Amino acid sequence: MRKSQFSSLNFVINSTFRKVFDTRLQDVVDVCLEMFNCVRRNRLLRYARLNFRKELIILTTFYVRHFAVEAAKELATL
Image (cartoon, rainbow, N blue to C red):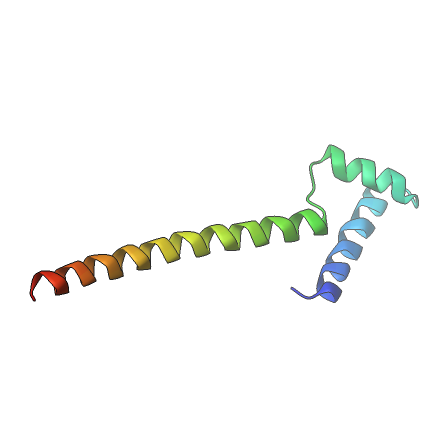
């Protein structure tokens, strides 16, 4: 997601919490977000990056193993 999309998402989340808790104070919204364990934009982005890296490592390991097995088979036929 682009930064503008994250900002729009944050706006919707903050607006919703402001309406639900009838407040205009960002400090109150922040406390409510924390209490309800809502993931903030920076945490969400960090989680997405870590998850992508984890999946990349798994795929890379799979393909390296696959190519190593294929190379061993090819060498055995020589």
